[in-house]
Amino acid sequence: MLATAVIAVLTFITLAVSIILFPTVRIGKIKIGAYWIVAVCGAAALLIANLTPIDHIWRELNGDTAVNPVKILVLFFSMTLLSVFLDEVGFFRYLAKKAAASAGRDQRRLFILLYILTAALTVFTSNDIIILTLTPFICFFCKHTNIDPVPYLVSEFAVANTWSMLLIIGNPTNIYLATSANIGFAEYTKVMFLPTVAAGAVEFILIYLLFRKKLKTELQPEKDGFAIKSRSELTTGLAHLSLCLIFLIISSYLRLEMWLVSAVCAVSLLFFSLIFCIVKKENIKYVTHALKRLPWQLIPFVLSMFVIVICLQYQGISDKIGDLLGDRGAVWTYGFSSLLFSNVINNIPMSILYSTLPSGLPQADFYRAVYASIVGSNIGAFLTPVGALAGIMFTGLTERYEVGYGFRKFIRYGALISLPTVSAALTVLYFVLK
Image (tube, rainbow, N blue to C red; front, side, top):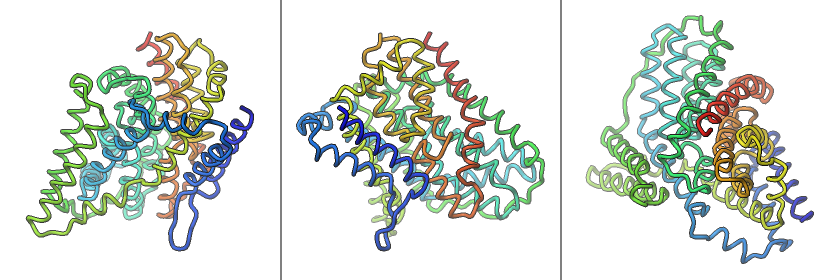
């Protein structure tokens, strides 16, 4: 047990350090994320030490359950492909430019419009997609209109990691924690609707008050077009995303697994897009670019973290952590501890670990613990850059676009916004599940 705990703790510490100090490493001309290399090394050390039977690990990884890691990855990558494809044809940039044009010279109006747009897009796509697509737009737009990008970047990142709580598909942590508890799409949304709205309202007020003086400055609207690159491809992408969301909502009634629904829609999108390009004799660049942009490095990271958590569970370490959290005030203990733990080991491994903790609780407290952990895993993403992979992508993008948004500034704004926001979400969740 001690050896397993030591290897796991060293892996988690190294993971946090790598995210802060060396998020990427270069091998020749190739740049790769250090976080997944650390995770693979930690899992490999546990496998080599043979502290947990290999056949037990294989059974857990290959089990015919909703929490099978392959099924979860298929669900996440399928939804990501649908969203990235829409971004490739210019859909998200088009909406953002429309919102900016509607604001005229009023920064406060622009701030509100972008907040609403970011929240709406996050709900129907995912937090990672929003970070990847809107962060470059905000940096570019603010540079060309001579306004401070920080209020909009803070808002975008916080919004993307708050409204991602509303649907299961909004965050990989939602997918894992909810499916591990056999929570369906509709049931999840029913519970998380009010906590998400409450968190969003508190968050909006806090961010607006923080930056109200900067938002008084008049802006010079950027004169640029709003052209969609391919309206036919846009229609195809929107149709598939809409059908996917509809079938996800009714999947529990039809007894369809969510990963299968999203996978069929993603494959269908690729097929129809390919046929369209053949008929029109056009390049399949939107599909190929979308496939290249998928976060493939997430696969070894998630699988490695699964191995580490399986070993912790086999050795009884997960049960001991669960005993420390106790069975009283599950909403508060699991909510705040998951937020803090996300910023120690990242929210994906946290969600994998926390899915094993409340198993011994009474049913009512079990669900409180699961939903509270979901809240902590999302909002914990904007406490520090360690909290989520979205934080790694976000800080990398702001550095690339030469925006002064370093580690200290991230934590300063993150602490001011995340702690009241998570408190609001957990308070409402407590009454919803009372």
